[in-house]
Length: 461
Image (cartoon, rainbow, N blue to C red; front, side, top):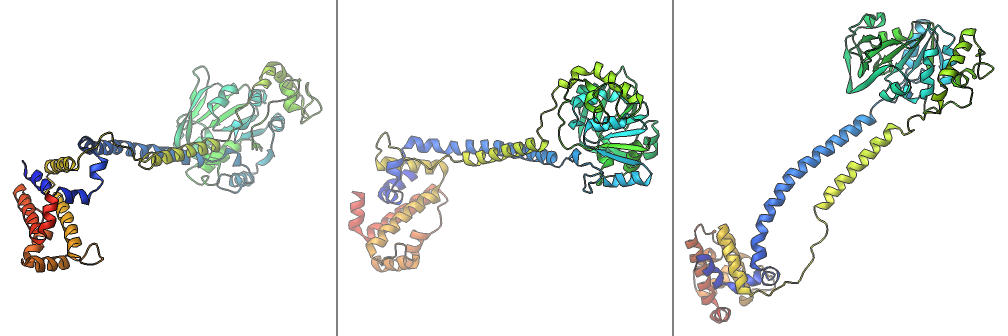
């Protein structure tokens, strides 16, 4: 028999009293299977927790980036906020450029039909595609500047650009083209959306394809890949101010289309021109737009070639912040689920399928201690049980855990043995070998027999 088995057999009842749940709550098989479950669970957590934290950080980063994107509808000539365009409007006014602010695409197109104007669209995504398709009917003396139009807007508006790719953040680049406005501005923070020119069209490509200039019918259309050069918070950086004012000051008028929501499709049966020509003149078709004959002729062509476009649906009126908030809520729910999944509920007591004798449980636990080389813990259990018995037998008062010196003095008086020897037996150092554990167990058993022979005999029996 091993030394640990001998130690546990000699004090089986004290060990049972120290852990009364041992004989009734676990058998040898569950106790042996429990240790491997801990390392497996820890290994799973070491993999899952960093992955979950990385995913959460990624989601929060994406959501924060989406929320902090500037609102294109805030770029108005009277808004003095960081995303506004009041400083740009002031620079244009200093150059003698007149600004006409309109809030409907039909009004903007009607004004641009008179020519000698720049139609500035800070939020092209809010325009109905039907109005975008009639830009080609504007006169040759009109320039159209679109800020960061999306691939959907380009395709639905029949603008011959192959597509658009978006960077994470806007980058300042050199112009790399012969456009006078770009050459004068130099490096500018315009590289956020990069356009893919169609091989069948002729473009003036600047800023690594972040700025394209093309002829859409008669007017010149310029696609600018970022709103940064036009905003109050970034207009003073690089050559942003020179680029923004240069693009908008070619003609003495700027028609600033100030939209704050998705426009509905044109109504009425008179075709494309009736939708925007009627606001400036007397009719929904023909040549009366409140302007010259050129404006009326353009309206008639629009009605015949783009009549079918007015029934197309605009993009869904869902603001980008909705998806950002939705993603943040999903991330919060995921974090709560991970926190709650660590413990689904309190432990549930279940009846044991068999009844195990206390001696067998103690012997099995002793073998586990021996396998784990837990000599100190095994001796601690035996000492604790013995001290509890001795304190009860010595009647040392109501305190269930008197001071060690009190117990040692009482046993020394009871047995006549030196206090140092009793203190070493009850409170000595942990054993380093199985031989020391066996010796300490024998000394503890001898002390029990010497102090109270009748109790020791009853326990051994």
